Structure formats: C-alpha cells, structure tokens
Picture 1 (spheres, helix red, strand yellow):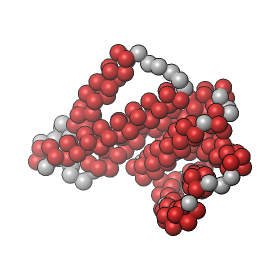
Picture 2 (cartoon, helix red, strand yellow; picture 1 turned 30 degrees about the horizontal axis):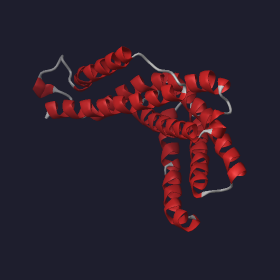
Picture 3 (tube, one colour; picture 1 turned 180 degrees about the horizontal axis):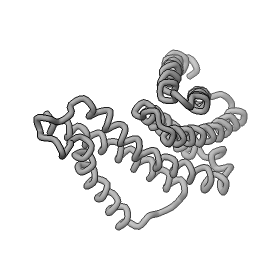
Length: 236
C-alpha cells in the first residue's frame, strides 16, 4: 500500500511538473525567447528524474519501519510540499510577465489573441496554485505573505487582461467569444479580490479565512460556465 501511495504521489508531482513546464514554454514563446535544445532536454531530464526522489521523500519516513509508517498525512503532506515548491516559481513567472514583458510590449495583448489566451491560462493556473497552497498550509506568516504576493500579482495581471479584452470588445463588438472571455475575466477578478481581502485582513487565522473565502467564491465560475452553456447557442 505504501508503494502505491508513492506511485500516486509521483503521478501528482509529474502532472504538476508537466503543467508548469507547459506554462513556462508558453511564456518563453510569448517572449519570443528560444532556449538551446540541450538546456531544454537537460531540464526535462532533471525534472522527470527528480519526481520519484521527491515523491519517495515526501511519502516515506525513513526513520520508521514499514509497518509504522504514518498513513494519515500522505496527501496533505504531498500537497503542502508541492505548493511550497510551485509558489516561488509562480511568483517568478508573474514577475517576468508584469515587470519584464508587459512594460516593453504593453499593447501586445490589445492586438494579439494568443497573448490574451496565455494571460488567461496563467490566471487560471495561479488561482489553482493559490487555492491549493492555502488549503495545504498551516497558520504561518511566511506562506501567508507568499500567498498574498501571488494573489496581488495575479490580480494585477487580471486587470491588464480585462483591459485588453474590454478594448477588443469596444472595437469589434460583443461576439460570443468576447462575451465568454470578458465574463470569465470579471469572475476571476472578483475571486482574486476576495482572496486578497481575506489574506490581508485575516492575519491571525488566515488559513481558515482563506478556505472559507475560496469556498464562498467557488460557485461563481461554476455559475458562469452554466450560463455560457445556455447563452452561447443563443448568441451564435
């Protein structure tokens, strides 16, 4: 059973690595940066090679016999470790976007649909990372500050993406695609603002306040998705 837990943990880490690698590739494509093939292959090899090692280290306790392993903390410990690894990387991604690429190519997202798609994918990824991070953490100041920074940077990116899609909507009219993306940007903006408020004000019990706020906001994207299922056939 413990071996099965390690395999499942490795699968979680591998999925997270592939998702982050895909997002990173999209970022470099947007930045028009071509990395050396040797660097790409070595990064993939190192990442895949590290997956089973990290999975074993997070799921198995070497100071205990196999019969005395702790069976209750596997998933929570895995999620906590995973999000602690991804949060600094996510902050780096957002910093590159907001302070590196966007100031030099501010009008890009207003004209190129691919850029808006990448930004929206980034916002979704950061929301998922933030939700997982907060639920996996305990009352600790450092994770709270990291989560607050992640949420505020994502909120800034969301405002920029919303401005871009709003500009295109005013220019081209409210098409079904613009309707869907514009509404989604508003939903994510409200979610990020609510999460940011919970993290900013809930200093003493931020984990519980964060979880309550996420739980209260989860129906918003679900309701918007249901609305799109009903409205898009009519708009088309």
